Image 1 (cartoon, rainbow, N blue to C red):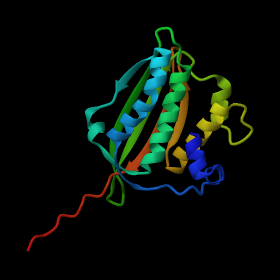
Image 2 (image 1 turned 90 degrees about the horizontal axis):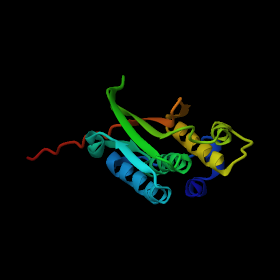
Image 3 (image 1 turned 45 degrees about the horizontal axis):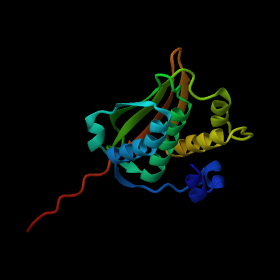
Image 4 (image 1 turned 180 degrees about the horizontal axis):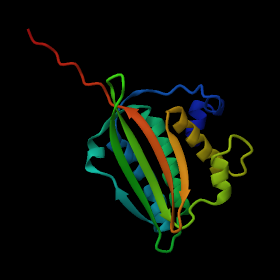
Length: 187
């Protein structure tokens, strides 16, 4: 997270002037990198990783800021791993794509990412900080708040949900589909 803040500048994230890089990328590569970044902490904490990622995600292409998407997803996942209970602990990654045709004729995909763990997950003060615009009390909360704001700048949303036996981040991002490359005519 500190790399995102350093690269982008906290002020540009806060005031919404952050310039997002846009390009075509493989969502499968992003998810592989997100999982890789969490593997060390998963092993250290002896937490099981459950992946519920359809095969179509491995082949999916999207258009957006690959670097920042990867970083914010990594930070949300790392937070779940950090606060997952270690006794019979697990963290689940679930990704669901939904193709959408826009009124202007372009296609986009609504990606729903869910990072879950058993129990309460994040402490209440971190959750409160994540949804605060100022007056943070934890470093984790500042980082997650920054990630949430970046997702919002991308037109997405972040929720944190506590159920009776598990907690999870729900990250919703609508990303345009890359335009098909024009076929070249041979004369």
